[in-house]
Length: 631
Image 1 (spheres, rainbow, N blue to C red):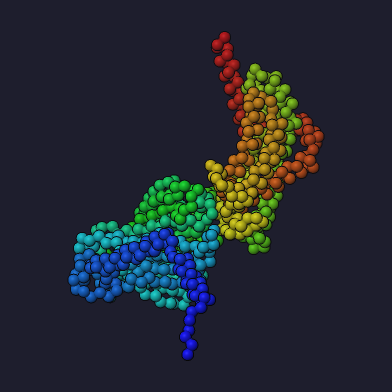
Image 2 (image 1 turned 90 degrees about the horizontal axis):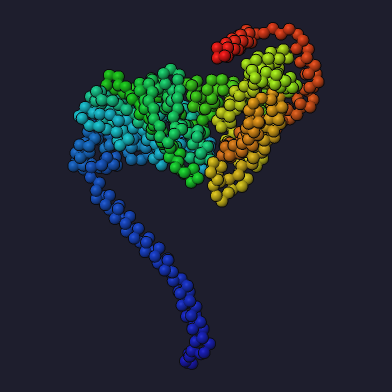
């Protein structure tokens, strides 16, 4: 049999294979950084194991032991010493959370404390397309603080409740009971209905009159840190506040300063409002006295933040026969006027529509009109159509204003002559001026009054657009969200009072305002009679012509693009109306002829004019008497 020998090719092959294996081993060798990471991971694992072991070694007298069924008698004695009568509840409760859902809300109840530990709005997302959570990751708490007959002070947030979930038609009932025994307990009862953001909430006790110390106050403490949901931190924070109703329909708010607090009597609801979303606690029986606090958590608006503000409310619970029985409601949902208003509990005050006439204009004109237009067309187009309708409605006001300016412009030479004639007697000049204006029917007040008529509409719209929930996440042209600012460029730096981005609609609105003021300022100056201080007045109006658009540019860069769109369209229409009135409607020759006719007719003075004339004559007589005495 021939002996097998290694030839040269075999040796070379083995060497190549060995070399390749060594190269692969060298390539897979960990780098110093990887070795360091591996060592760190091992260390963290050791620390975690030690921590778990330490926790197991120290679990002696905590409520958690009994919540999972521990029966050690020594532990039970320690727990009773801590919790007194409520040790029964801790020994029989579960540490698990309780989850329920409706078509609108996903709720998680923490069995320790019995309160809502997570509230998710299923049909809404934030500016990053993440789900909207009003409560999550321990940003909220609900606690009843009370004294016991055996001189203890207990907080329900530290105690374990036993959950029971039942269905009754389209209503889900969650009962959380803090038990002394099967027949003695404190209960939180939540009733969640399909299609509703509002749920019934009742706090009641049974058989605890010998446990709760009735001589000490029983307080319900509610705390919430509000999540940021919008792109503009400053804009969202401006509309994030505590709103409460008290004393049969009065309402108030706080939260516009770094730290603010307030108290009120007979409070019927308190709302922790987060601009477009809100949490509201309502009560059937008013809280006798309530205390509120708001704290701003945003230290730097240029830095990304999780929370905007921190709110707290301390609400007293009254005892009846030594027991608690308070019927309430929770609302977790949008700050949408249409939804809140349907409950007929004055919740529409949570939406800042303005006070007095401004709120009426929004409630009974702009909200119904915009809802109607929004059902027929995209919301951006609806804003434009609504703006056109408003400007057409107010066009007669602008006509009156420009008619008055035209009359004053025609009378200007005569008024200047009167002032020159009586330049040494200002009182006489004023009397002659008023007489001439009265005869000609060209009072300067006729131009001021139409402008005043427009102010309520202007302010109402300023309140309407930031509060219009329907605009949220609605796109138009390059704008992705009409309830937030539009962005055409990101800046690598931050400009004070302006921001780190460039919005186009405020630029367009500023340009439109500039040309509108240029048109109106010239006419106003031309219609004013020459008098002392006129050069300074002209200079000031010129400054305003440039300052107002600049202020608009800075102020609205972080505001809702829907509001900037309104101002842009509104000023464009105003420019068009002015040009039409000046070039096609007003005829200065006809106005001049009418003035001359009016001057010929005897003009009956009103009581106000007669009184003013008498006062001026008396003042003139007193002045002349003083001059005689000096001589």
